Length: 86
Image: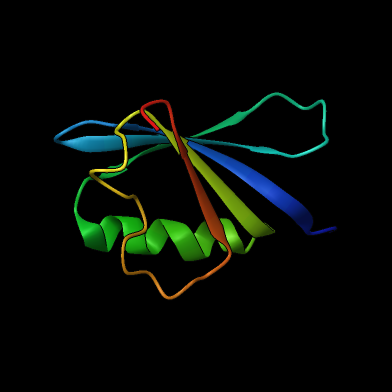
């Protein structure tokens, strides 16, 4: 199976949980709803490596703004973050 170059990861951040969906760049396939994860940093730390197994570059998009970065302090360096509040 081919590993995608870029994976767009959309997250809807709530106090209790984070809903996650992803879509490969340059593909016409619809986004895939992954499901909900917990809102603890440990839950997010599990999400990033799982997503990196699908693509070399992750682009996270979320509405929470720069005050709550999704992968804060994570060892992976090839993650980009986009927010509607930037």
